[in-house]
Structures are given as structure tokens and as C-alpha cells.
Amino acid sequence: MRPGVVLALVSASSLALLGLAPASGTVPLPARMADTGGGTQLITAQAPRTDSTSGTLSWWDLRHGRWVRAGSAPARFGAKGLVEGAKRKQSTNTTPTGLYDLPFGFGIKAAPSGTRVKYRAVKSSSWWCEDNDSRSYNRWVEPLPDDCRASESEHLISYTAQYAYGLVIGFNYDRPVRGRGAGIFLHVNGRGATAGCVSVPEGAMRRILQWAEPGKRPHVAIGTVAGVTAVTRY
Image 1: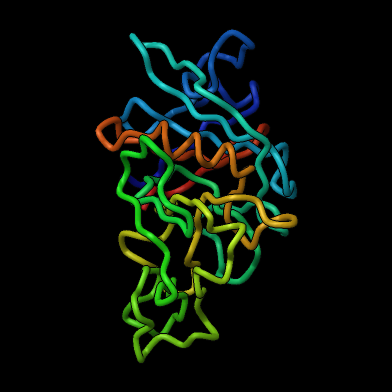
Image 2: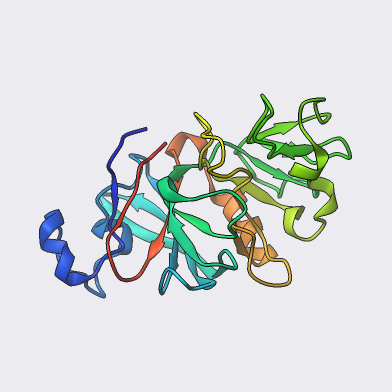
């Protein structure tokens, strides 16, 4: 991943510094971003402020050189708002801002018809290891390894609503940094704000899984409406 990427969900006063055109109602959000991941599909998760716990998630296709919105839904973020991914700390209930890939989908329910991304079925033996002392830190494991404490991990099948369907967000995933955070997903809404993930209604999550195509290199960009969010892609 490239360092120093700027997620251009920015105020007009900052756009000149980035060499971007001012925001306009006729210019799609991805077209105003400094980096969209290099593919032709993008998910944007946008909150009003860093202390917000809700906002809007949209998914986009690049068609004939123009970004076209394929759908949108209300989104929920961490109970403590959003924070730059490179500065995030584990167990802070914050959603990491930045631009991330989407390694694979998963769910307690079967993959929606037409799903093309790699999709893992959640079983009773499925866990996400979040133990900083484990060799399996920030990884899906089956079964839970001896060096990964259950008290420091998520038993995926226990979250029947949230993990009915999900996509792994590649935050701290390729080269995990201990203590930065683990188990950041795009998943179905629970009862309120998340512990750091991004969540949407179940119908929207189904549509996203049916829409995403690995060959189009979909990414997710998480940020705020106002202010430059300087992040490191990793």
C-alpha cells in the first residue's frame, strides 16, 4: 500500500492545496478524491464530523470515465466517532478513516445470489482473533488457536444480526500493527453505533455483496464531510 494518501473528503478551502476542483453538486464524490484505489468500483462511507456516529454510505461504478452512484444507505460508525487509521488504538470504539481494500466477504447467512467476491461461511468454529499476543492477530481462524484468548476475540456466530452478511475492511490487515486494532468490517446494523466497524441495513449489505466484483478492485474510503484526513494506506 502507498503511504501518505490523502482522502479528499475535504472542505473547499483545502482543495487548492491538493490540486483538486472545488466541491460541486454535479461532481461525484469519488471524482473529487485524491485516490480511489485504482479500480472501477468504490464504496464511500462519509460522516458529518469526526465525532459522528452516523452518516451515509454509497457505492459507485466508474463508467466511461465518470463515477456513477450505484446505491446508497444510511451508515453507522463507531460509538466514539472516527479517527485517522494510522493513529487508531484498539478497543477505542472508533472507526478508522482511510482508503482500504476489501479482502473477502463472509456471513452467517448464505451468500446472496450473484455474489462474486470470495465469501466465507461463518461456522460455530469461526473466530476473529484480536489477541495482540497471538500469531493470528487480526485474522479469521477456525478453530481458535491455543495462543489466541477467546476473551480477546470475536466468536463470529454469536453476532447473528451484525454478521448475517459482511465484508472485511483491510484496515491493519496486510501487515498488522499490534495494538492498532482488529476486526474492522462493513456489516449489518446492530442496535446502535458500532465498536469501530461501519454498518448498514441488511438489505443494503446484500446489495453491496451482489454488486462488488473482484476484477474491478473495489475499495472503501472512510472519511468526513469537512477537513482533510491524511492517512496511510496499509
